[in-house]
Length: 326
Image (cartoon, rainbow, N blue to C red; front, side, top):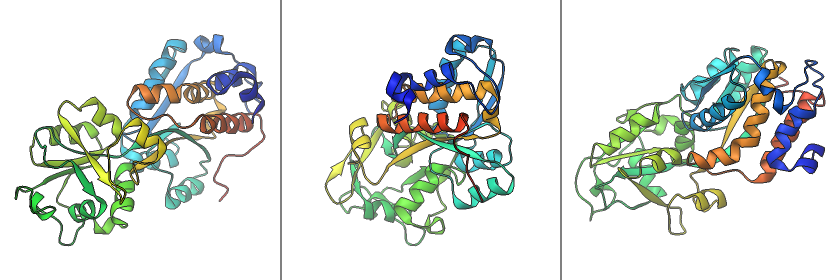
């Protein structure tokens, strides 16, 4: 365990890091009390799922460092990685781990980075608030609903006792990490997903679509359900051990399987040469668990945040290199 974590505990270790470090890579020294002296601009982009956490962190950070402008753009995890690997952004919000081809794009462009897990999410299945029939789906039914070949077109195709009403599907677009995770988990291959659904990288568009159609079905991050549960009903998942609904407890303990997943931010090595980015990332790691909960996600275990802090500390003191190596 890092000396910073031992001395200050996980909650304060990240800020203690920037308080005490003489950062060898940049020769900058600053403390928490000095955040108000920082200036500059930090650009983040990527996942619409992780975006609310980063936005919440940015707002809290602004109270301490009002002269640092932090933008939180939403282009989906895949779209964000395109910008990140082109060197256009400092922080990449990601609802899945970086793909091999994205890592290669970063390597080819000379963009090295650090990866930090910041929270957990439960990919939530939803129907309209007036749909009190569809309360649970097993994985076979979920696959049948979204598969490209011979998909279920009506509720009755999933259960003979349900209405023979056409289902209107809403889901993240192909640039979304949520889309990638859903396809891999439910279907296995992107080519197998049906194409007759309404896609959007903006989860609020998906919320509105399901909320306005009694026969709609959609999926997105848990936080967007929590914010809109007055107009949506969550559908439980049966993975062979009975129906389990998404909640903070079931997402964190893994019983909401297989739709629980970690969330990440990626930070470029070049950006971490700047004091304002160092401070923001340290602040982010200190606040991630608390603010993730505030915006409807689930905090990662304390040892995950401690490991994040240790990785940042090691990098900033010159003890480790960012990835990728190739």
